[in-house]
Structure formats: C-alpha cells, structure tokens
Length: 267
Ligand SMILES: O=P(O)(O)OC[C@H]1O[C@H](O[C@H]2O[C@H](CO)[C@@H](O)[C@H](O)[C@H]2O)[C@H](O)[C@@H](O)[C@@H]1O
Image (cartoon, rainbow, N blue to C red; front, side):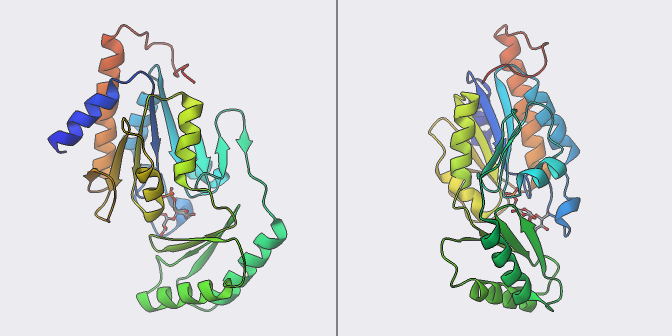
C-alpha cells in the first residue's frame, strides 16, 4: 500500500459516520467462471463484519447483480445495506425495495438475446430482474466477439435500454440507474460523513467519478480509472479492508465510544 493510500485510510477512519460501500465481483470476491459460485474472500468478509460491528460505521454491497442474487452470493450479515441491479433495487433493512419492471418487455429482451447467441460455445445468458447479461468468460475470443455483436444487433430496435460492457459480460438493462445513484441513496440512508467505495469494472467508474471530496475511491486491478488510489486484486483489497477496520476500531475506541453494543446505530 502506498503512503498516500495509508494516509487516506487513516483520514476516513476518523470521520464521524463512515459508510464502507463496495462493489462485489472482482473486489470482495475474485472473478470465477460460474457467477453463482462467486463468494467473498474470508479476510474481506471478516473485515466487513468487524467494521459493521463498530459504532457509526455502516457496510454496504453495491452490485450489478440483482438484489436476491447479491444477497445469496454476498452472504450479507444483518445490518448491511444492499444495492442491486446497479442501484435500481435496495434493501436497507426494511425488506427489499424492488423497482417495477415491464415484464413483457423484459421477456422479449431475454428471448432476443437467447436467440442471438444460441449455438455459440461458452456463451451464457444470465436472466436478471431488470434485463439480462451475456456472459462470455468461458468462451474463446472469437465467440465472445460474435456473441456481443449478435446481442447488440438483436436489441437494436428496442428503445430505452442501457447497455454496459463489463468484464467478459455485456449487460442490457431496462433501467438506467447507475452505481453513482446507489452511493448517493446509501449515503443519505447512513447519514455518512464520508464514503469508502471500491470497484474493479467500467460500471464502477460512475460511482468513483461521483464521490465527494471527503470520500475515498479505490480501483481494484489495472484497468483505467478516475480513482486516485489502486490495489492489485481482491486479496490486496481484503488486506486494505482489514487495515481500515483496525484503524476505525482504534479511532472509535480512543474517542470513548462504546463499541461493545453490536451493530452501529447510526442511520
Ligand atoms: O457490480 P458487480 O458486483 O461487480 O457485479 C457485476 C456483474 O458480476 C457478475 O459477473 C461478473 O462476475 C462473474 C463471477 O465472478 C464472472 O463470471 C463474470 O465474467 C463477471 O462479469 C454477475 O454475473 C453479473 O450479473 C453482475 O452484473
């Protein structure tokens, strides 16, 4: 970790109400071929559990995954805030708040995508609450390219769709919400003085670009980014989180706050 990043971690550890809101795939969980098999690194999870147990400290997962999928693979603990479908769906403790979707349009979209990529080896369609993802992690480069081109052509005449090209995935959504919207909603919900956000993918750049001056944005991996700080991979990010949890615990302990009472009561 650079000295500059260590100084930033200390600074955010000392704010009044801290929100640690993180992308899931590629940040907390290493990328794997089967999306349903994705799980958070144990060290990352332990750090998030430790952070969420501290006063005036909230933890959130902010993902492109649908809310139910995120809850399942993210194994979210009680008190964690969840934003799924790139900020279209939320669960902030009062049960899921899904956004309405036109099921007929969604069904048409999925049918077109499935038809477009049929027969292409290694291509898989993931059905999502607000659209679908065309996954190509298990395909060779040629099939991946053909699948994305065919998918784009198949939905060309459908209005109002948002297309996102992520890591070995093309996501097509009926919603235009972004992770920047998600972070703002979670910031309000938590009453946060500062937010720590980390992401690895193109879709995380919306959130990184919209962070406030007192926030901390971290890029995971070597892709282009607007973030000023970067770590190499999810393992390095898990160490960063453990470091942050230690600093935050030392701060709230030294300021005389009672940390024995379980989850933070800050809202
Ligand atoms: O916003 P995120 O939490 O990063 O979610 C983005 C997408 O993640 C999933 O796909 C990615 O992870 C898979 C499992 O490691 C990997 O196989 C795939 O290549 C990646 O693109 C998920 O399946 C998508 O629905 C999410 O939108």
